[in-house]
Length: 403
Image (tube, rainbow, N blue to C red; front, side, top):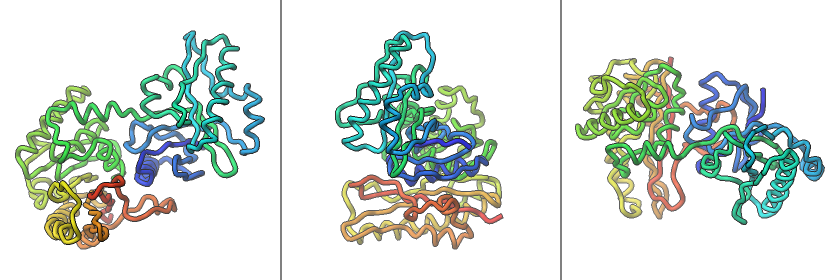
């Protein structure tokens, strides 16, 4: 097995859970080497595709591992850098250097390494220039890598500094945010205040452990964001929504995605239906789906932080919806199928108020599935997705129907 490094998105634990699911359910063995705040390094048979996942920023192939004390010697023997050079007919080459984690001393190291590579490339007869970063950064963003076409036309060398060793690698994959943005803002019907983001939709799908040819359903499909990602990923998808206007909007967006990505989607009126998720088994067959990925109703839109009693009132209001739906989810899932589901988490001035989703799922016969525990990766429970300062966060749960 080879070693690969992954630069993680803002929600590192969720990113690692998605990565572990990708490896596990695709039968790719992997072993954790480093689990750091800014990156994750694992041995595996092949790298994960950064564009197939919603939570990764970059993927790098590790080419060398040295002790921290060996770095000065490594920099002096710049011929070692040949591991990263590419032969090109382009007389002008813009390359990148990124060092993780961020620290002030690594900013100076970044400049030294960039100059060494530039000198070496000029000896090869190339007019080489390194991508000049602002003074407060020592790594390129994924947007910079994409816009400069660094992977296709040049290279990016990455140094990942750990306690006693330094991993040196070459970027082989990069998340393209422009495709996610296109699917989010260019589609015919946009309801941003009611929609799951394409990034989180992709993560939810990957957490189910789907396989090619699996049937996936979103019983609260709304404008179809999760279904759009499922379509682009090549799944056999289905949707349901109580609101006829939402079901119509979902079909409209799916027709758009079909044309935009040349997917040749058909029978969308059969695939996306109006109906109540609390009666899903009346619309779709029992044991009919391999996976469910969904974000149900999280409560009314809030303009300010709720107080403790208000948050508890919202939870009491939506609990019957979740309880009824999870019973239906157990019916329509095949044995061994999994559901990734979002539930609300309110951050009030007097503490956190949440829905007891695990208890409701247990009453429905669904069992918790923890991919990180399977690989002995410690993490807070449950998985969450929210940014500092927000008063409504998302909890993300994965449950499985027993075989």
